[in-house]
Length: 507
Image 1 (cartoon, one colour):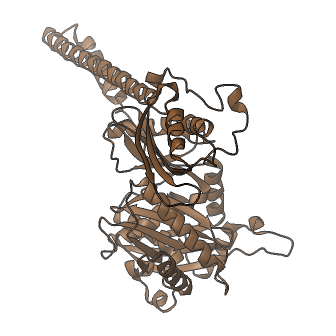
Image 2 (tube, helix red, strand yellow):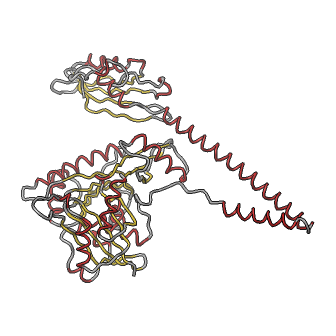
Image 3 (spheres, helix red, strand yellow):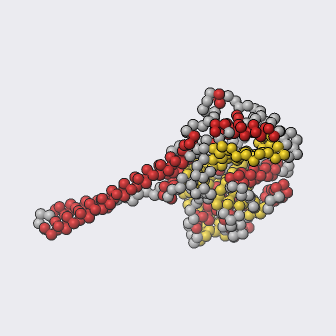
């Protein structure tokens, strides 16, 4: 049976899983962690040769060369949600890379980039979750694997691999909105799944578990922030279940704390329950089974032939056009043969002329196809231009609000919601409180500057110390194409805007 090996590492330990394939399933033979401790008192973890220590651990278990799958964490990559115009599947890779080069910070043309499509509520755009990794990090992973006499065939984003394993559990699949928490050696992956699709990924650093419970309290706070971010990004959809990878003492303490503080349903998930285990491994499982969820997810996907969601060694690319050189060579050979036979055989000459007519007809058809393809690319460029023209400079709008609104002694804002409108433009919804009813009129006048359209709900009195009038204002924002392409105010537009904003303005 073919053998597969999956591995990943951080500053504290390397994790390795070895399995043999049985049809489209795997039988897990080894799953172990290698502590990456410094060799002497004067060295640091960064000085440790990861590949050599992995090689030694594999040699101890008599594991030879096999197909290798490597995982990389969220902290080592650039990950961002992008919005692009609708396009055919074969055009998506080029459009995503074009948009990523504009919106990502510090990536280059040579960075491997992969993406997964997301569900979009706006028919006029397509949302994708794009990930890019530095070539230097890819080379570091290759060198470490080479030192262990391994050659990575895949480089998968760790949270997506763990999510793939979770989706194979029938008791957790479905359309619910779930948060998966994977506790690793010194990090925790927080992955939000909606309709079995990864929509949000966060990785946080946490201290080692101790008797004080500090790491558990930190994780509860990060879970609360992730739930709030998911609620904001997923259009008011809320996390319905929290799933913890593993069922050890750390997971039990975290489960109890989350249920007590957040009142949220929490389940535990044993990654080793999703795969068949060799007899020896059934008796001696690793100390922290939850940390192996990404590795097992990679192994199961590879054995089943399921494409990995994010694979930096095999990212999504535009389909290469067919190579017609062989065809043209054959046509040229046939034409040369016809020329040689023209001298003696008139019938063959006429046959050759017929062949030439068919060739010219085909060339004309190919020319028409090339013209049609060029027109299509021109239309795609026009669609992208229209999309950019209808974009809203939200940072400039936020700067304008902080400059124009009354001071915090008069008005406080509890919520600011920025959203796009169909077909173009956007709106800003301000919820807040005012100390006096007249202050609401000042807010409306400030918002109507520059001819902005403002929809007001008036004011509602509430018994509240210092700020007794609740208000809600909606500002209609025109896109750049209608506002002249230049924001009305912003830190990069006018000289006066470069000064520090008033510290008494509402936030």
